[in-house]
Image 1 (cartoon, helix red, strand yellow):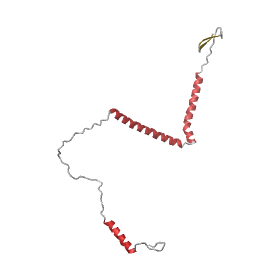
Image 2 (spheres, rainbow, N blue to C red):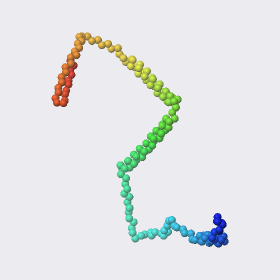
Image 3 (tube, rainbow, N blue to C red):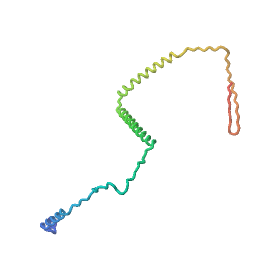
Image 4 (spheres, rainbow, N blue to C red):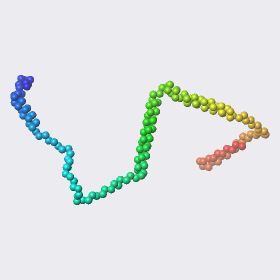
Length: 163
């Protein structure tokens, strides 16, 4: 290899090739180490040991109230999921509303409302009775106002009597 000032590297080409070959052979000759990632003991366990087996009863009994709450929470979760899916479908449909779609959907309701209004008006006209009240006798009108006021300390009471 030539350097910019015209000198060569410190090692001739044949020595460099020999050194490269030596390094490659040394790397290839090194032993490959396998590290075990698991261990399996292949020895058979004894059929009868010196220690008798110890009973290990399972004492994880779930109370009835806990099982009920778990079942209820699953039911509520499933129900809310159904409500959410239904709301999503309704809102997806409402997001793509057009004027013609609104008119088409509301037309039957408008017709029912008009018919109910007409029927209600006819019934109210038919129910009005022609009542004539005839009063006989003298009529007197008294408009006397009696005002009584009582005051004690900071509280007061006013009473108006119309006679």
